[in-house]
Length: 267
Image 1 (cartoon, rainbow, N blue to C red):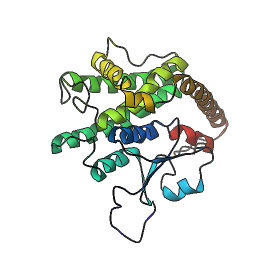
Image 2: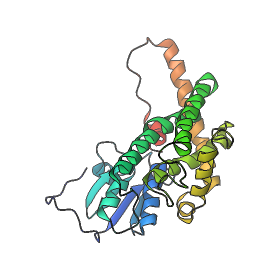
Image 3: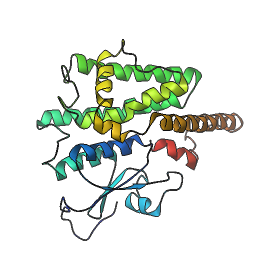
Image 4: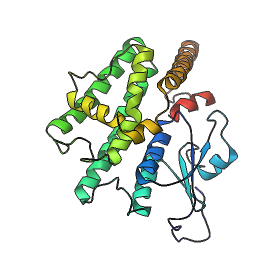
């Protein structure tokens, strides 16, 4: 990340710039949060197959989108950016609750979404056969935990995880959950059944109906076209890796994916 000679936090009125990708759910998180807070910003679309020098300079650690630049200072990682927006603009619509425990709980489930649920959904999309069946079971196990929290846990009786209005966890979960319908169309695998996960299904329906969400998420036909091409690429890479593994000696260290696979990692 870039450093400046001064440690002072930039004034809230300083220009905001967002480096992102149109198909990146992580980018959509930041875009949605900026809309909810009514903050103006300049947007830079990145070609993830040929990343700009400016993006790499702003995020030399992970080399990924999104990156928010505020007053010349760069900040990567979507969840960190969302929390920064709350800290820097406390007078705008809050994403985190006032109660310290509730704030910590929202952060915990955001981590769960990125560490457990997201990778499981990605594994369903990038696999077939028994591997895909195992990934589907993981998705359903993770959704069952969220459903339980909505039914009997900390989020019981709420329309959104944030309460009457969407909060941090809604943004994090919601800006990935719309891919579920896209993946279902592309793979033929149904991940969210209204009978099995009624509360999660109702939450997703209400989330996707929000005007700010509709303005943020790309058109379904564009997402479908992108997802079909991405799945074809990922299955091709998996097949090539399996073929190479048959002739090569096994090792404990996994082979690094080709550079083109980085596009999938950024979503």
